[in-house]
Image (cartoon, rainbow, N blue to C red):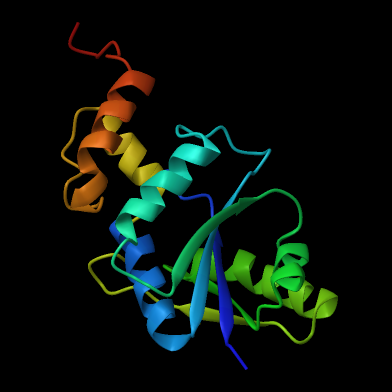
Length: 170
């Protein structure tokens, strides 16, 4: 029986931390579907389709990784795909509180699907998409945080979405 895992997130944009978790999940499971969620509580920089394309570019060398998108309850998607696991990255204790609640809720809704938590390397422990957006907004170098294959696309988009802002020096 194939061991399929779902790796969900908003990925706005995908970071080196996300890439690390996806690669590690791909080494543990027969197949991984990276699922980009349409979260109505977030105002993304990249469209759902753009995020899917960026993840495809980053995961091109991972033959057992697919990319998809969804809206609604994650557990409904997991059930529809007959996945055995949900893979989530945990950076800090603050992530754990929320993710633990979600894991317990998902277990109640679908006991046969396990939630697997992976911790990133120390290089990526602090990294988040929102941090990448904040650094880029103020013209900082995000090349250490974003996979090189999509760096130019991300930087260009963030320049457009975050036009020059007034500074305290003016």
